[in-house]
Each structure stands twice: as C-alpha cells, then as structure tokens.
Image 1 (cartoon, rainbow, N blue to C red):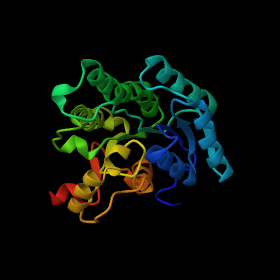
Image 2: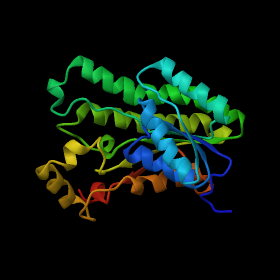
Image 3: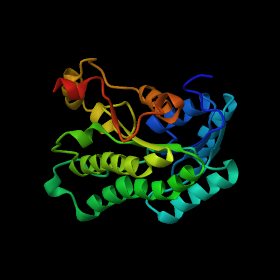
Length: 254
C-alpha cells in the first residue's frame, strides 16, 4: 500500500471550489478519500463534486459560510451523516477584504478577518477533533500563509490571522498528540489563485515577488495539494505542530 493512500478516509475541505482548496480536495479524492467539497455556494460545491465523481472519485458538496457557527456545525453534522466520521480536516477557507496600511483598516474589516480566519479554524477543530481522537486519530491541515512569517505594509490583518493559525496548530498538536491527532499548517507563498489575484496581476508586485524567489516564478494550486496529501496520509504520520513553507524559496532568499 502506498504511503500516500487515503482509502477508507473521509476528508472535509473548506474553501474547496477553486484554487488551492479545489486542488487539495481533488488530489485527496484521487488518493482514495471520500471528500466533502465546501464553499458558500451550493451550486459550485455540487459542480466540483460532480467533476471529482466523473473522474472516478467519491465526493459530495455541502455549502457553508465559515463566518457562521451554525453553518459550521451543520457542515460537520451533514458530513458525518452522509459519509461518517471525519478523518481529515482541511481548513482552507479564508478572507481578506482589505489591502493597505494597518493604520487605515476599519474596525469591522479587522474583526471580519480575525473571526473568519482564526475563529472558524478554532471552531471547526473543536467540532471535529474530539471524534477523531475517539476513533484513534486523524489529521488537521490549516492553510496559512508566508504572510504569517513576515511583516507587511499592506496585508497586516491577514498576516496576523495567518500567524495565529500557526499557533493554533502548535497548541492543538500538543493538546491532542497523545490521542494520535496531528495538526499542521501549510504556508504557501504567492500562488496563482483568484484569492491572490490582486498580487499576481499587478505587474510591479509580481515582478518584485518573483525576483526574490529562487525559482523565479509563483506557485500553482496543485503544488500545494501534494503537501496536504502527505500530511493527511501515513507519509506524514510523525509530523505534527509544524508549518511547512511552500514558496519557491522566497522566505530563505530574503
């Protein structure tokens, strides 16, 4: 059996109708997991689930707005009803409604970022991890960002939230490690997604970014998905509490 085999596992991936989340949910299905595709839009969830099923995978779509506790609870409940206990949780959904100096961000925008990017991760972990522990273990993967490792003059609130996600992983890894539940972060650099479009479509920002990346290019969603599969599978069974940076070498090059 492959170290990366996910046969018999149930994977719930938030924010998985496009970009990094879609790549992750598709690759996990390819490795044999039954997967839940989730985003705000049920039609899009069903569309991506249909694509996975047509390719030979097993997927269902469940819409969820991560800003609402009741919807997070329903997401977990419906997953358990339809597929069984969750073995793999990927917290990918996030927001960033503001691009600019921290001095000028509104209170409401700041609060929205913290609630969505930190609060939803915390709540989903509370909802899912106890049953993982009761079933002998599981894997939680939080999609963070290299923004959580560096200072920023334009993405301050977002960067704060992503640094907090890394600490959530460290805290919960210590708390739940004895029950064989592993919690890790992935910190992508600039990846070609709609979420990061404001960065990679801006010629000046793009050029400045790739000039500092040893690989001299930005990443693609599928290049993040492989690490998520590793962390979800037996290949990552001794890895917990870590933040794995996938950024074309950007952070080590300065």
